[in-house]
Length: 97
Image (cartoon, rainbow, N blue to C red; front, side, top):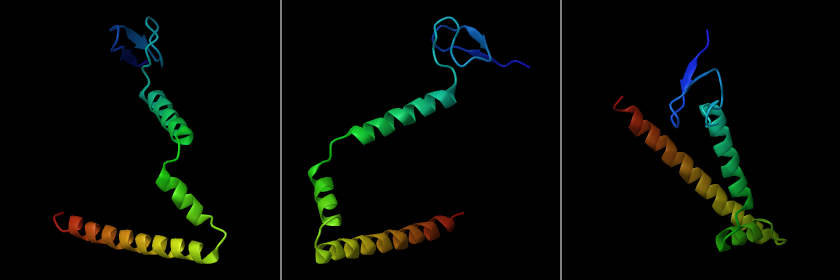
């Protein structure tokens, strides 16, 4: 059985189509979401790095072992902190229901 889709732009009924046959408006929400995700990924890939990102990249890839060690030490502490907070929030959320 064919499913009818109403175009929100021109109010034309379309049979099993991804685009409206009259105004060519996108009707398929899955395709629309894929297009949005692709646009977001392209923006993220093409964005310029700010000063903090550049600093973190330099410290993470430093040629000095001590500098890289300090980075990974702080990164590990931050990771453990977020895990503990996440577990605490999950326990609190499980209480009411």
